[in-house]
Length: 373
Image (tube, rainbow, N blue to C red; front, side, top):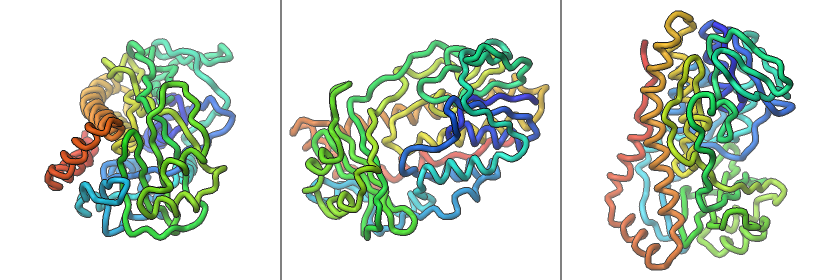
């Protein structure tokens, strides 16, 4: 099988590795001049870890830390708990540096994958990939669009709804020095949230989400300090342990509408190209890994069953990922409520909801196994 994977993010790397291990000849195209991972921290849940296991890649996260503080859940800015997660519901959760995972996946590609950097894709038609320099890659048995929210491949598969701003931005960073944590999770205020999670060697991944009008100036790290330093411990200490140069800020975006299809002909979408979602459930990368594992399991390296395998992939993946994307969007909207009456209602509702219900939802999202063909 001759396969072209467009995009060398986590979904593209997992897909390229999986297809190659099944015997495909894979060309991995990356628009940037080098393959490297950005971002800060990344949560790997049980479903993502099972996807990596299915792909033969579980060993790329040996140094991930279990999220092991006794307390984990949702709090108010004064530190009062709204809900606590059952440790069993997040028993498999690991938090890693995104750049470390990206580098480890890249190192597992092997000789069966040709990596071409500085290579942008203009369009895909039938079994041909046309590059920005007007050259083509012809006769592809499979073309995988793993090129993110602003995918160049997506319009060749279905009508492209484009990106939609979720109404808030997020600062993210990893502390420059260790911080002792006795609890982890998310704290919700009025129009703003703060989350913390432990990393290996005592470092902490954190994010701060704040409502902003689209295109508004968000300010720098001082803005984060001003908004959150007075919140409950250890948020102030986490911010004090952060190098301002390590802080990144991005608008939170998602697909404007769910896609009508993930597959057309021999072209298939994975990851954010198929189902870009807000990060509120920590499932973006995990769903991309599921995509890669599903596609690899269904194809199995054979050319003659590709069309049937892709139809099955579309059926299996579209419903699940779009449901999770809707849930993530809803969690974000509620978490970013700003009016005082709405926030009081939200907090009361969360406190009143049995923890068993919230934990069951968390388990349900992770309830996935790779297909057996």
